[in-house]
Image (tube, rainbow, N blue to C red; front, side):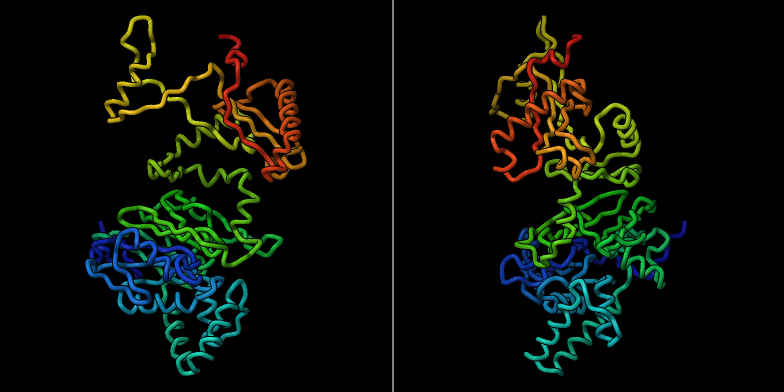
Length: 458
């Protein structure tokens, strides 16, 4: 079988430690704020105790280090020039590679004296260069502009990292179709810069299609451009743009370790009231795009790493939800089940007994436990809104709340549920809970007593 040919590729065999992909531009967490990539890289490598020096990298114990930014490394942040110098220095030393981006492409054309409109943070670049020229002189400014232009114009739309001739990771800015991987053309470059837009919102911001649902080839695609609150792992694609410049995080993806490292932003450097973080806060209770999950997805957890949910389980879960649970918009939380003892009790007249649980934990090396009395109730989740009008913005209908079981089904009949929710709403207002905590809703994971309220037939 012949291996695919890539016009833009890097052989990982040259880099024993793999490579690191860094997300969007952002802030400096140790010194006065800069664009973000330059010093946050230092912070990230403090975790691995490498000897990093500002602007130039010195590695006393490692000679094969590679960075690959997939987010915009300029604009919006307050110090783009230092960030660009960082990558110029590292690209010249073959310690970094650059991929094309929408902001980079626009600035490259501006440096080439093309007629472009500098907006959405790009105007800050012009101001920085004007200030640089005042401080360093016209000749130094023109030399730097030439280097920046060369860096940005030579950046490929996508870069394939290969192992033994096989593509394993693709770095690109906004996304890529499978048959574009490792190739170049005007159409491919536009797709990799802007993603797959399908129109615009009233605010003028693009509406983007979920291109990643159609990814089928074996490469892992690492991308940015479209900020998300957490790394999004779907269909072997990884979005590591957590919008540090908007007050989010700068995320690194380590390969081949397949690990994430992140640095929190110290503040919102862009101060954009319409940024993705503000939008996410407003829309985070909206129903998800089911289509993007049908082919399976991954959930990142702190304790267990990446947990993959296969397509068959997704479809059966959606089937169950559509028929038996409360509306999806109201199903904000499903609690974990209470784990039973790993085996039935060996004691007569007992199906379960605490000694099996104690034995299990002792075998796991746990010598100290906290045992709490469990009330004989039924698990219930209560979503309670400040008022009916407020609920419309979250779940799309006017209601004071809902009560459901740990499986997502309605806990009581509609009449009793409405009565209880109204009483709880009255109690919360009397205690000024919504005002005191400046919140629109309360989500409670509760034990509803007595247990036979729900299990009447048992």
